[in-house]
Length: 125
Image (cartoon, rainbow, N blue to C red):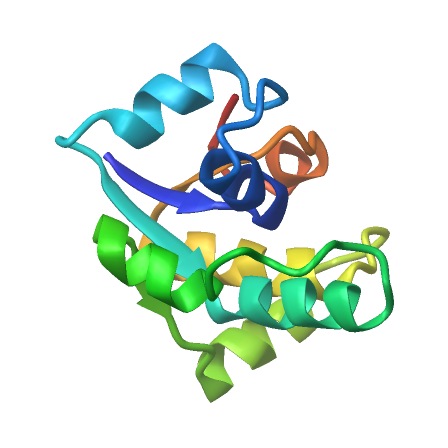
Protein backbone atom coordinates (compact mmCIF):
# COMPACT_ATOMS: atom_id res chain seq x y z
CA UNK A 1 0.00 0.00 0.00
CA UNK A 2 1.20 3.53 -0.77
CA UNK A 3 1.06 5.74 2.32
CA UNK A 4 1.40 9.50 2.43
CA UNK A 5 2.15 10.77 5.93
CA UNK A 6 0.36 13.92 7.03
CA UNK A 7 2.71 16.32 8.81
CA UNK A 8 1.58 15.49 12.34
CA UNK A 9 1.80 11.75 11.63
CA UNK A 10 5.34 12.23 10.32
CA UNK A 11 6.40 14.23 13.38
CA UNK A 12 4.78 11.75 15.76
CA UNK A 13 6.47 8.84 13.94
CA UNK A 14 9.89 10.50 14.11
CA UNK A 15 9.40 11.35 17.80
CA UNK A 16 8.03 7.89 18.58
CA UNK A 17 5.03 9.62 20.12
CA UNK A 18 2.18 7.71 21.71
CA UNK A 19 -0.20 10.10 19.96
CA UNK A 20 0.31 8.08 16.77
CA UNK A 21 -2.36 5.36 16.68
CA UNK A 22 -1.32 1.71 16.83
CA UNK A 23 -2.86 1.15 13.38
CA UNK A 24 -0.85 4.03 11.91
CA UNK A 25 2.33 2.93 13.68
CA UNK A 26 1.99 -0.64 12.38
CA UNK A 27 1.29 0.54 8.82
CA UNK A 28 4.31 2.88 8.80
CA UNK A 29 6.55 0.15 10.22
CA UNK A 30 5.33 -2.45 7.69
CA UNK A 31 8.12 -2.92 5.12
CA UNK A 32 5.54 -3.89 2.48
CA UNK A 33 4.12 -0.35 2.51
CA UNK A 34 5.64 2.46 0.43
CA UNK A 35 6.02 5.62 2.53
CA UNK A 36 6.07 9.16 1.24
CA UNK A 37 5.92 12.71 2.54
CA UNK A 38 4.86 15.83 0.68
CA UNK A 39 7.22 18.77 0.28
CA UNK A 40 4.35 20.73 1.83
CA UNK A 41 5.23 19.07 5.14
CA UNK A 42 8.77 20.47 4.95
CA UNK A 43 7.33 23.95 4.52
CA UNK A 44 4.78 23.45 7.31
CA UNK A 45 7.42 22.18 9.74
CA UNK A 46 9.88 24.96 8.90
CA UNK A 47 7.20 27.63 9.09
CA UNK A 48 5.92 26.43 12.46
CA UNK A 49 9.44 26.10 13.87
CA UNK A 50 10.30 29.61 12.71
CA UNK A 51 7.18 30.97 14.42
CA UNK A 52 7.70 29.07 17.69
CA UNK A 53 4.80 26.66 17.16
CA UNK A 54 7.11 23.62 16.92
CA UNK A 55 10.44 22.99 18.62
CA UNK A 56 13.56 22.55 16.47
CA UNK A 57 14.14 19.00 15.24
CA UNK A 58 17.09 17.15 16.79
CA UNK A 59 18.07 16.02 13.27
CA UNK A 60 17.13 17.67 9.97
CA UNK A 61 13.82 16.12 8.90
CA UNK A 62 14.99 15.46 5.34
CA UNK A 63 17.95 13.48 6.68
CA UNK A 64 15.64 11.44 8.93
CA UNK A 65 13.37 10.68 5.99
CA UNK A 66 16.20 9.62 3.69
CA UNK A 67 17.69 7.45 6.43
CA UNK A 68 14.32 5.69 6.82
CA UNK A 69 13.75 5.31 3.07
CA UNK A 70 10.71 7.61 3.01
CA UNK A 71 10.12 9.14 -0.42
CA UNK A 72 10.03 12.93 -0.63
CA UNK A 73 7.30 14.11 -3.02
CA UNK A 74 8.03 17.40 -4.78
CA UNK A 75 5.22 19.84 -5.48
CA UNK A 76 4.67 20.25 -9.20
CA UNK A 77 2.65 22.87 -11.02
CA UNK A 78 -0.07 20.23 -11.54
CA UNK A 79 -0.19 19.46 -7.80
CA UNK A 80 -0.53 23.15 -6.96
CA UNK A 81 -3.28 23.64 -9.56
CA UNK A 82 -5.14 20.56 -8.31
CA UNK A 83 -4.91 21.79 -4.71
CA UNK A 84 -6.27 25.20 -5.73
CA UNK A 85 -9.11 23.51 -7.58
CA UNK A 86 -10.31 21.43 -4.64
CA UNK A 87 -13.74 22.52 -3.40
CA UNK A 88 -14.13 24.31 -0.07
CA UNK A 89 -14.62 24.62 2.81
CA UNK A 90 -11.21 23.35 3.98
CA UNK A 91 -8.73 26.18 3.49
CA UNK A 92 -5.50 24.89 5.06
CA UNK A 93 -2.98 25.23 2.21
CA UNK A 94 -0.70 22.47 3.50
CA UNK A 95 -3.57 20.00 3.77
CA UNK A 96 -4.78 20.93 0.30
CA UNK A 97 -1.36 20.17 -1.24
CA UNK A 98 -1.21 16.87 0.67
CA UNK A 99 -4.72 16.06 -0.62
CA UNK A 100 -3.62 16.82 -4.19
CA UNK A 101 -0.58 14.58 -3.72
CA UNK A 102 -2.72 11.76 -2.34
CA UNK A 103 -5.13 11.96 -5.25
CA UNK A 104 -2.38 12.16 -7.91
CA UNK A 105 -0.22 9.45 -6.36
CA UNK A 106 -3.16 7.23 -5.28
CA UNK A 107 -2.07 7.08 -1.67
CA UNK A 108 -3.80 6.45 1.61
CA UNK A 109 -3.11 9.37 3.93
CA UNK A 110 -1.96 8.59 7.46
CA UNK A 111 -3.76 11.28 9.43
CA UNK A 112 -5.98 11.90 12.41
CA UNK A 113 -7.66 14.69 10.43
CA UNK A 114 -11.12 13.54 9.28
CA UNK A 115 -11.36 16.25 6.61
CA UNK A 116 -9.29 14.14 4.20
CA UNK A 117 -11.99 11.47 4.02
CA UNK A 118 -14.55 14.18 3.24
CA UNK A 119 -12.55 14.79 0.05
CA UNK A 120 -12.73 11.13 -0.96
CA UNK A 121 -9.17 10.39 0.11
CA UNK A 122 -8.58 7.03 1.79
CA UNK A 123 -7.41 7.61 5.35
CA UNK A 124 -5.54 5.28 7.65
CA UNK A 125 -5.57 5.95 11.36
